[in-house]
Image (cartoon, rainbow, N blue to C red):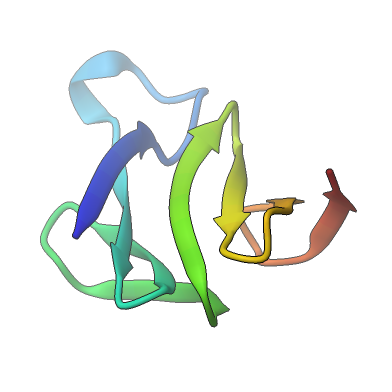
Length: 79
């Protein structure tokens, strides 16, 4: 399992920031709240890694490619 976090909104004061966790289990990439509740599944496939890239998500796919996706899951580009 790989997990990382990022502030959910950039405009809130630091004492009131909501953190989102990016979780990777068995090739599935999920965004979760800091309480652990599921926000959204971004990738349900064969990913080997995922990390925040600003407010977007870079997903390393086991085929050797990397996909850059928005927090909503929409594809931005394949690298």
